[in-house]
Length: 596
Image: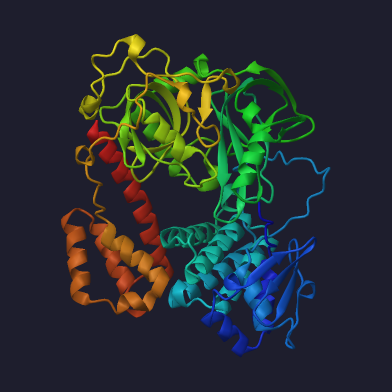
């Protein structure tokens, strides 16, 4: 397991960029990947970076001052080597929290009137984003990034925690795109920029706004009374920004899903360490593996708006043996029709991310394994006509998702109950997180399953999953590896179905608008004004012809210069992002409903 590299404060990078000679800034802009190619060596308390001719020394933790960094060159610390290293590191804002500080128990979601300092901070961030959109992410050098970094620091200082976090995501995404990092995601970067603009618009409104548009330094806790907490499963967490850990989900008898987690800077191995190590809920500290399978009774419990259980010392929590998915509170979830579950998922998706409850995108499915198509597993749910495509939740080689789906493809006809995360852009696709044996339901398989000829099997011959007793009747697919002996009456090799029997992927009717929108961010607003007018007219006509007249108008707005249209660059970009987000989700839900 490698040592995490230090993080750096945004205001420090901004100050260094502004105080560094212009020729040094230009050199960093010309070679944004330079530091990634250098030799980074971790010491006991510091990092040494060999640049090929000079040596940069960095502290081992968070960097907040230029005095913490040195270079052997004569221009140190305002040299190319130090600036390249600093701009290569992840930007982070580290809070100093007193150990005895009580959890906040203010009512989350209260209306808040932003003050003028907060509005000024939001305006500064909007200005930084406007500069980014004008030049494009591909051309956003250190000067543009400096403006964003200063604005992020100002937002954080004024208590605009949500905007500060979103700004950091934009900075990180821009850096990944410019350095052609493997994790670069232009579509996600465009969505993050739209989120910044949407949140800023709420802060700048001259009316009180919901608290989640402001955010909090620490998640506010409110009293909850779930009576009993039924452990559901544990999920590995591995983020693009270098954090890893495990999250455990519980179903309370109040009908709400709650979660507890241990996520820290680190790689995939830390996720497994958290699964076997300890997660804290009040005075209780247990491995995620045990929490996911436990039944708990508590008093004085608190949770955040998004269902994260508090860790206050006043909490009382007692384990009452193992939980079971056969409990009525859990089985009731599995009996809900799938279209009804989708409706609930999309209703939550319309909320801001911070206001969505824990498990908002989960579906509880009961059915039978059909077979494999490529890396996906087809699963026939009891409450839906067509098979659900179960995809790999996380491709990390350190996790067990891929191998577990492959093992299950050995057993067409295997009856399972599973909890999965919905793909919002195509709800027919779900990412399974945990499975257990079904509770005696009978299912009518889709014709796709005819290849495996299950109709002649007796109950005694049908595949079974014999889960070892320590796993308490369930398999956490990211952590627990299904072993071949657990599958009784399974095939010797995976059952692979013909690709021709699966409907072709849906064409994205909003593709022309989406491509122009993302292209606007990557190349700058001027790039769209230079687009081929014939192609643009054809795309607008196509959108109008298939019923997306608003989409055609937005495409036209993106391609016009500010003097030729009634809205600003920012308004056009934000409106397009909101339109694409909502249209795609509604289209996905409609397609799924029509298939039934």
